View 1 (cartoon, rainbow, N blue to C red):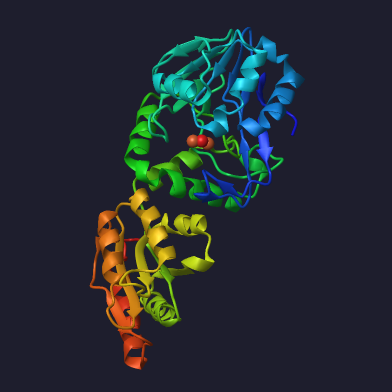
View 2 (spheres, rainbow, N blue to C red):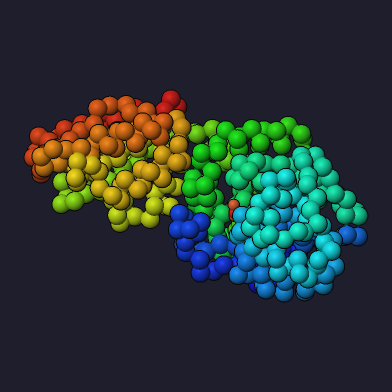
Length: 400
Ligand code: FEO
């Protein structure tokens, strides 16, 4: 895809990965593909902000060459070490060997440990600047958003923030801007990105956003390193991040389960009926039939999680165990949970689920419910009431 001038003299020169369907080593499904955004700033000095994933290096170099010869690049700004943004650096630096690389101290360490190259590196801290001519870049360290090395780059004359992964989305499109694409798809992917990668970092994200907003720097455009550029209303995604980082939820319950011969599934359906009858929104997923990345997105605005499994070898089934392990890593806050499941003789699944829920720091708000073999009518009613009771724990004052 050809370069796009996003501001006078500032070009998107990245690459579009139309066909990637798994990201981060199969931890994230990318049904809409993704982009690796790289920005070329042409001034008295020429700077490139971030590169692209290694297999797309030739596309990056071709795009840069359409604007300036790559050897003219004076500065390469490395906002983030992760290979989807730095993978093309070795190939690029072969062409602009005199360019100075800018990044945080952790970035310097990380780039060396990935590529073992002695590039001319300038370590920067928050507030450090780099004058390009008519424009000045200001660097803002952003550790753990989402790696220790992460950094934002701000161009004050253009009121342009380039925050790398933050505010990004995995969407491959020929369009580059938020006012050019479907808003539901855009926010769906932005929410999915936050839910699957950033949930555990909410308090750090909130503080960083507050610190940046407190400085009063105007932001008219946010150009992340994945997906669409926010130019129509950049504060829309900032507001969403603030809400997500504060763990604001709505009256919504997500039921996730794995069933062996169908009894746990019967329980799940009855519990869902009870939740819905109590006036609380409900979503239900058999984890073996569902895209985990999409299910985690559904957890982002849900107050309640109900987790179920049949018992197998005195424990929960393996797919739900893997899912819960992921949740334990995400550590969502301000949520409530409960467990359910069927068994034949010894049981064990629900106690295992409860243990992991506690380890994830999520509050168990009512005793679990278990059914031996196939639920009869009275047990189905118990499941229904279990859902209705749980829904009461998910009511939010003034919420919907
Ligand atoms: Fe898009 Fe953390 O890399």
